[in-house]
Amino acid sequence: MVPKIIIFVVFYVFLALQLCPSIAQTNWIRVGYYRYSSEYGFPISKINSAFFTHIVCAYTVVNSTSYQLSLSPPDEESLSTFAKTMKKNNPSVAILLCVGGSGVSYSTFSSMVSNSSYRKSFINSSIKVARLYGLQGIDFYWNYPETNSDGFNMGILLQEWRAAIDSEPRNSNNSQLILTAQVKYSPSVSSISYPTEKMQQHLDWVHVVAEGYTTPLMTDLTSAHATLYDPSTFVNTDYGIREWIDRGLSANKLVLNLPFYGYSWTLKNPVNNGVGAPATGPAISTDGFLTYKQIKYYIKQYAPDVRVRYNSTYVVNYWTEGTTWIGFDDVEAITAKVSYAKEKKLLGYFVWEVSFDDNWVLSRTAGKL
Ligand SMILES: *[C@@H]1O[C@H](CO)[C@@H](O)[C@H](O)[C@H]1NC(C)=O
Ligand SMILES: *[C@@H]1O[C@H](CO)[C@@H](O)[C@H](O)[C@H]1NC(C)=O
Ligand SMILES: *[C@@H]1O[C@H](CO)[C@@H](O)[C@H](O)[C@H]1NC(C)=O
Ligand SMILES: *[C@@H]1O[C@H](CO)[C@@H](O)[C@H](O)[C@H]1NC(C)=O
Ligand SMILES: *[C@@H]1O[C@H](CO)[C@@H](O)[C@H](O)[C@H]1NC(C)=O
Image 1 (cartoon, rainbow, N blue to C red):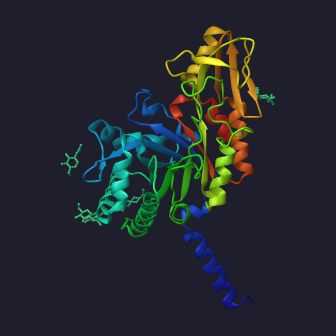
Image 2 (cartoon, rainbow, N blue to C red):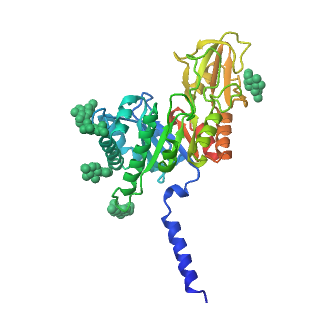
Image 3 (cartoon, rainbow, N blue to C red):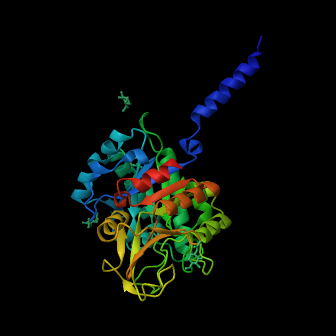
């Protein structure tokens, strides 16, 4: 006969497993950012949420005097049906709201985090809005804390935010809200001050922005704007990820950026057309920016037989014809980056932006790995 004590132990272990917070069960996430009040004109109903475990709606701004989230009537309209629409294709997808971005000035967040009553108002409003629209979490994007006191105060914000989320009264069907942040590719860029220890303690994970390092308006050498490696500079994703881990964020809190876009340059000399070739500025669009979908369309229109090349030193695809040079992440680069995230035991990846994909080719590629 099995002693009673063993039955009890087994029962309590079983119970403990059941009660484990969802964060402990998550070991690989696939996040898609969607710019819901967007100039891109991609309807919500066309997002295929089946490729993602989480969708983040970007961005929501903050009122600079009340520090509450401020939704325009069109934002409210989008959000009112968003969660329901996403769950049609994928009932288990979780929806997060990204608060911040370029629509919230540095000084608004700097002042919000510095004052306890402002923080309270901000936190309270973020939880209220998330619940009102049936969302599962909040993503904080301050671009970015500049001073030591900003960093210190942001740490206090995260601590209070976590406490508010822990103690929020909820009905039995709501699970605890997820709290994440979007941060720069590396914590050790000058004039940046992130509260890494509090981030580790209070955030479920962070979205590490690893794109836009170089653009045709910044440099006249063709380049990989989201280079995974670069032997000649610290401005590369692998360096940033290692810095985050050195500073104390665990690998399984880091979520790697996959950019679904690229940049086009005009070459100085069509014969010299590798990565790092001399260029005279952007091609095709005014700043050279092109979504993956636009790049594929352009290639199909102008030279479908010219093959897309891949450079594994940087982890970038590029396509060139005449004086036009386009650098972007195609299937090979996306595959290498997702493999990197898995090798480094990161928590997963996030896509900027879901509507840039071309027939879900990249989302499918990333999701299969
Ligand atoms: C911001 O909040 C203040 C105080 O609640 C309010 O008077 C003002 O109209 C709000 N501003 C905007 C742009 O919503
Ligand atoms: C925070 O803001 C409130 C309202 O403006 C003000 O009364 C209070 O003195 C501020 N607290 C600090 C510590 O600055
Ligand atoms: C926000 O503040 C109001 C008023 O103090 C309170 O009734 C409400 O429960 C708070 N909501 C959250 C989510 O903390
Ligand atoms: C919880 O969900 C179930 C099934 O979806 C529903 O029947 C029930 O009314 C919900 N309860 C609350 C408090 O919302
Ligand atoms: C990638 O491009 C650089 C610069 O053009 C070149 O030196 C390197 O050999 C290329 N790497 C591969 C694997 O082709």
